[in-house]
Structures are given as structure tokens and as C-alpha cells.
Image 1 (cartoon, rainbow over the protein chains, first blue to last red):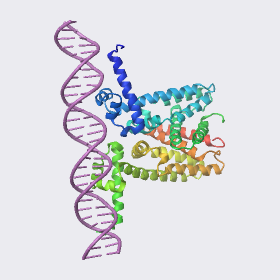
Image 2 (cartoon, protein in one colour; image 1 turned 180 degrees about the horizontal axis):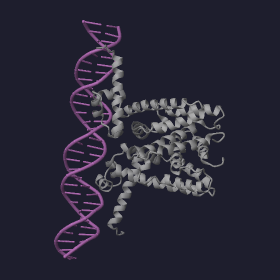
Image 3 (cartoon, rainbow over the protein chains, first blue to last red; image 1 turned 90 degrees about the vertical axis):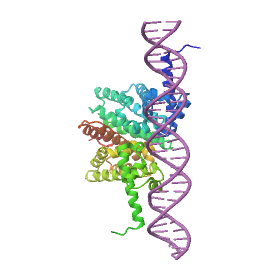
Image 4 (cartoon, rainbow over the protein chains, first blue to last red; image 1 turned 60 degrees about the vertical axis):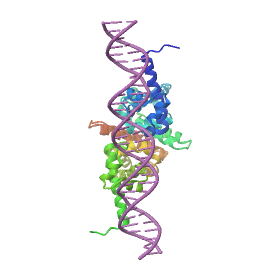
Length: 197
Length: 197
DNA sequence: AATTTGACATACGCAGCGTATGCGTAATTA
DNA sequence: TAATTACGCATACGCTGCGTATGTCAAATT
């Protein structure tokens, strides 16, 4: 049996709670998820929860922060794969659309998150996805590929469009909706280009 | 004293409840609003509420439907003011951004609505805003001003971008953010044009 | 005039959150 | 190493608030 320090145990408990909350929130939604059941499933009680996260909201914030990081990392990595920077931006947007098809991300980050925590752009996670897009856009303007635009504004609109599209894609069973959404996304984004297509 | 038929009373009660719910949801949020307090403020009890709307969710749906209609009407009317159809579309988008600055619309339609009722595109109101945008886009493509695009997909992305921008504008105190958002919106939308600017 | 319908009020039960409190073990100090 | 403190977590309690079952009375129907 490995000896475990107190700090290690603490981290493990936090992780167990976040994991349990992640599935519970995804399955039942934030309001529908019971803290009693959630903590019990993690082999703990509500006591642990309030000790670490203050309240139910705090737990959601922690879960959202986790998911937000994972999304940004994956999308940015996909964008990096492209040697062509412009194609990279498009791929990044497409990645958001695909990522947001994940039921966990939809329910927690896109639906319950904003309602409970308020506007995403004010989240302490600083909306890493947004920052990633801004970085990419910045590089594209400096390279003269994209018109000199307000980078933050453009990034927000692009992300908003992509995430909204994702909700649409996810809600419809039609298989070709994903393609329709990505196509339209490319067309819209081309509005930022210096030269067309 | 005017004589009132039973049907008139019914409509009046519904209206009183919807009005009360509208302010309550806007002020405290959906979860934070108490049905007891809400109905009492309207001079009624929860009995009336469950009789007319089934449950709390049903009441929210009714309120959202109301707001959705109002938004679509106002935005479309603003769009119609322009003789130039393309400028009309841009104005319509701009109108959404401005409309969504209304705290009631933000909180109820943009934040709580999706969380409680699910993806807006599945709402029974059929998202009148979306339909309005689609109609405008359809006309523009037929006129050869806009590239032949998937109208529904494009409309969804445009609306998503606009509504997201609105959340941003509302959350920041900066006065010039509204202008930055609308400018970026125009640039993005120009991606749909056959010829540039 | 008798009966039915329907719009609301009243009453009840139960789930679930937050807080106050208690307990035991690991860290700290001497 | 013995005594004390700190802290991670469990237990216990009260309160709010939703949904439902039931009651009531006036309007509509016959």
C-alpha cells in the first residue's frame, strides 16, 4: 500500500467530485442533478463538496473550467496541424463545431454554464477558446491575409457563430447538417479575407 | 363597471401571470424566481399558474414565446426601413445586437431559455427571429446580391454571431463596444456577398 | 332549476440546498 | 513523543419551494 500525503488525498477528492459532477450535470442537467446522489456516487457526502467548492455553483464553475481548457487545447491543436494559417483558422472553427457536439460540452458549457455563471466572456477561465481564436486572428492580420479588423470583436462573433451552429448540428438528426454548417461557416469567415477565396 | 365575460377574464389572468413572470425571471433569474411570490404579486396563487401553464417550465416557455415575437417584429421592422435590401439585412443584425442588450431578453431568452427549454432552434416559437433572417436572405440570393448559400445554415450562423455579440456588449461597460461589434458583424456578413463592399 | 364545466384557491408531502456542528487523523510545536 | 492545532470530511437540522391532490364557487349548459 502506497503511503499518501494529505495533499495528495485532497487533490484526489477534488478530482473525484469534479468527475462525478461532470457526468451528473451532463446527464440530468445542472438543476436536475442532486448533490446528495452526485457525492454518494463519488463515495463522499455533501460535506466534502461544500468544503472544497463552497456551493453548487462553485462546483459547476470548476467543471466548466476543466471542459473549457480541454476544448481550447483540442481545437488549437487541430488548427496547428495546418501549414496554411487561414485554413488553420477555418479548421479551428470547424473543430469547435465538432467539439460542441459532445453532449457533455453542450449541456454543461453551452446551456447550463451561461445560465448559472453568466456570460461566458466574463468567466475566470477567460474563455480560453476565445483567446486561442484571437491569437490565430492576430497572426493572420499581421501576415496580411486578413483585413485589419478588431481582433477581439471578430473572434467573439466567429466563436459565437460556431458554437451556435454546434447546438443546431447536435439537435438535428440529419447527418448532412454538420457539412452545411461548416460550409456556411467558411463563407462567413471569408468576409474577413483581404482577397476572396 | 364593465361586464366581463369568462373568456376575457381568462385572457387577463394569463396576461397578468406572464407579465409578472417576465419581471420576476428577469430580476431573479428562472431558478431564483419563486412561484409563490410571483403569483402573489399578480394577485393570484400557484393554483392559477399550474392550471394555465402546467408547470414552471411551461410558464417560461410562454414568456419566451412572447419576447421572441416582440424581438422578431422589431428587428424585421427595422430591416424593412431600408430600401437597399443588403443594408436591410445588416440593420436587422444590428437590431438583434441592440435588442439583446435589454436585460429581460438577455436573462430570459439568451441565458435561462436555452438552459431550461433546450436548444432555441427547437422551440415551438420556431425562433421567429431566425425565420425573419431566412426570409431576408432568401430574397437577397434571388436578387443575386448574395452568393447561393444554404439559407438556413447562414441565417443560424448570422443570428448566433449577433446574439453572442449582444451578450458581450451588455456585459462590458465600455461604450464603444457596441460599435466594434456591429463593425465586425458587417465585415463577417460581407463574406456572403457576391461582390465585395 | 338542475347539472356540469372550468377557473382558481387551499393543503400536503417531499426533495434538495445550505449551514452549523461534530469527529478523527494528519501536521505542528515543544 | 506527548500535547495541541488545523483541517478534511461526515452528520444533523431547518427552510424554501415545487408539484399534486383536493376543495370551492361562479359561470355556462341543458
